[in-house]
Length: 624
Image (cartoon, rainbow, N blue to C red; front, side, top):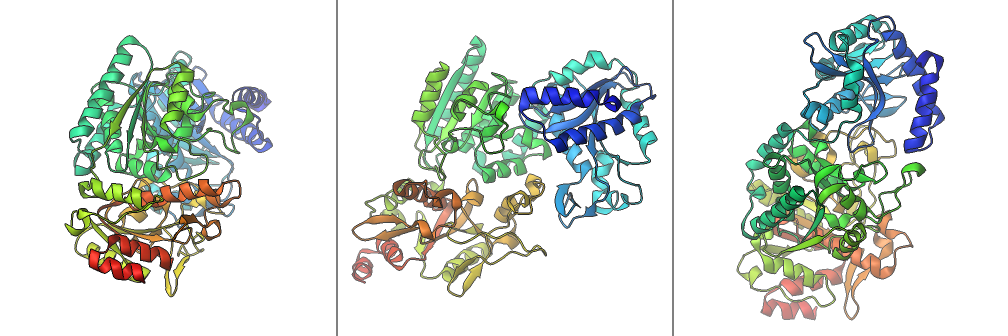
């Protein structure tokens, strides 16, 4: 079909029907690349192989260019993935796993298709339940062999060993690989297992996540957490036994163990119960952290809320969907890039309930930090009512963060309210460490001393300074400037820059590297990179976006913010103040053992000093 353009016409019709309008560039790519691939397989004896084109990876919008299905010499059902590129010239990149195409960063084709294979092996029923083998490769049909030499050597050798790279002139080698892997036939009969396969995480994947988390005290269930875990597990088992649907809402403040319970449910229900489980959040930093902790294919388990658009996700696609940080649920999963044909007509909360037999929401209603984040208990309850699904609520109150100091968390809530109060006995007793510094340099030095003594620590700040792209040599711009003290924000990921580029794997994502690599301690994190991470000590720079004014309380200063998401005029003043209070609440609760603070506003500093001073000192501080 391909050489006669019949296959391209078929693709255009089917793609338009399912996912929206096809761009001219994509249509042209199908015509050229699929014709080139057709020339490879013509006359190779693969007529009985099954072929899939543009098949989607489960629960994602990623698609595989071509998939060949058949049996190998040992009669094992097998799939060969082929990533097709029209590139004729590529340069090596300074970034691991990347190449430069037309001046832009892109994933090396072998890395790209290799990651697709990892994802499928650990999430698609053909491979996790039915024993299919899987072999990835890439075919750059317009590239000459001499041009491709640097794509096959040095840092790319490991990727190519896993996913061979073929270029123009390698057609016989590619044909031989296809014959060896799927040439025995029976492909048409096997094809439905691939095309109609469902999301089904492998036990190996869940065991790997469990092993990665098992050695950390942070992920141990205690007391109230275990009670909540038992209740949720029981509700899930009951719904599964009756083939019904259900939803569970778990509400708790920072440090009450919501994420701990969520991850234990993921592991236990996946391993012991054999359920198809999936974890989702709305936070890039948090999801990156979880994916980095687990194996390379962890992306199959750890998803985003907008991965479950109802027009592309079948009802009950998973048995249990665990929605962590559900306060970050948005009004809709649509964005400006969503094709019209798949644009959602229902709320994101309803989509998440539709996508699973049982959906579990973990939320803290005071952590919405951006416009459009509407995750509240009322929103979830309304979505459950509209879907006709019973909702059960569980409250978590015990404190497991901030040295277990519930009084400190309560004090932070009062601090950011309209009636802040003095710190209580928790400060004088040393139950939790809190200190105010007059300069950012003194704040930084205090964190560095703690780290030198063996603790972990980072500096974070309100989004009150521009966040520049890295320079061409990779160095970071010192955007955060307070007097003569200058520091860079943490490094952006390539897809966040103006140049754009491929998202790096979680273990090398700048957010994860910033939070974990000792040499990055002088980079400053913001709300978007810090949410989901914890350190022994956290230094917080409060900017002029939220300041204290006697007689008025907390005042939001729009002009001081560099966060375009909250600075825009459509955000009302009171709404802006709420977002900023939530933002600093998150930042002030990242420290496990202590929090150090500097405010760039003198009056706010005086308030903080008075609230945390002894009685005798407080009179003098208040007087000044």
